[in-house]
Image (cartoon, rainbow, N blue to C red):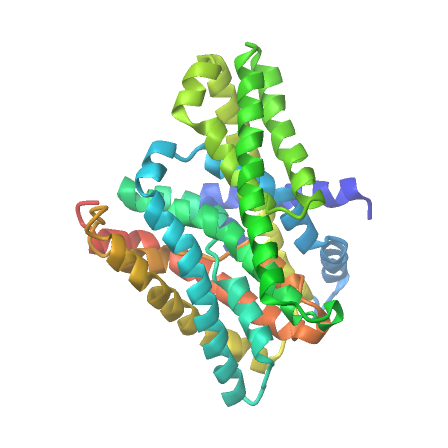
Length: 414
């Protein structure tokens, strides 16, 4: 099956399912697309008992797509840049200290809590697994997904200063989570030989700070180029080149591409940059271009997430472990955010019930699945992939469908 055929098939499914959602379900796009795709996949599996032609065609399509590579190497940079570009920098700056605490201390604490509790859970279920592999699962499932969060929060009409905390945390903890996963992966990979504390610090620092510095540099270069001309089509291409070229550079020098794209998006989307470098026409077209690209890639991503059901290794014990991991993940996130919320609640005038809403609003998505897919076979890949999938589906369908109700109940004036 050619690359063009695969892309055409995914876009056709995204368009079809998107239409059904917009016409009948009227759910937030991410939730609607994933729900319809899951129902479609279940229907294909059911039909296969009578005629497996469609199942074989679907399975062939999915097996030819390297989900981990497609998302992490190609789609993620565009999606994070688009999300950061439309995030209010001044509001983000006001909440900056809290967001950094959520995205660093919160993710690291959550990773170790989830990893430790999962280690004992699997022992109770008679499936003992090495502790370092459980920590890898913690790193996989701890970061919240800005791709899943953004659209749902807007529909929930959460207060702006609460929305900026959740969105800002999601944008940054995604990059931190990926770096933490890579660090733990290096430790767990016995073929790499022993890795010391200095090696870990260098790897983490290079990925995080190197990525942020690259993003700031990309934003500054793009700003200077955009400011020197007034041609909206060329200026759009410059932003596109910043994302694509920046991703290549980040991968080449082992820097965090997600953090680089967040920093670049915030730099180019800054109100002062827009006012001094972009005409009204350019600003309109840049925003619309990235909004459209964001919608298209989101649609394809959530169709892919739903269709990944076809390649899972179904096992009752794996599914049970995934279901029992759901409260572990939620409780660990709640506990991990307790200290940062306590520290910043009064200083930054948090809205009531911020802790509860941030916990429930922290959705997991494609990034967690992509990281799980990148595990080596000897790291209990199939089990952790099923567990991750169960948590992600619950997160998007249950938490995503109820977050608006939770916000309205806890903040009736919000």
